Length: 66
Image (cartoon, rainbow, N blue to C red):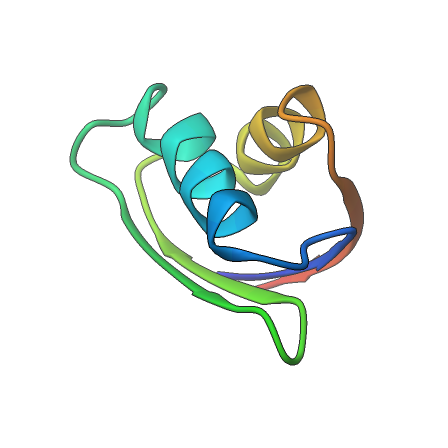
């Protein structure tokens, strides 16, 4: 799935978002593109669960797509 995230600006943000997702699904694959704000996620988590993880980490989710 792809998640559009607002508020990421540095390597720390990449690590924080990646960690937020992998703490909930240790097998998840996460790829963050700071330039576009896009986070590609392969996970057993639902879009709602991924969005909640990112929001809990302090970032704003603008949308998700399959």
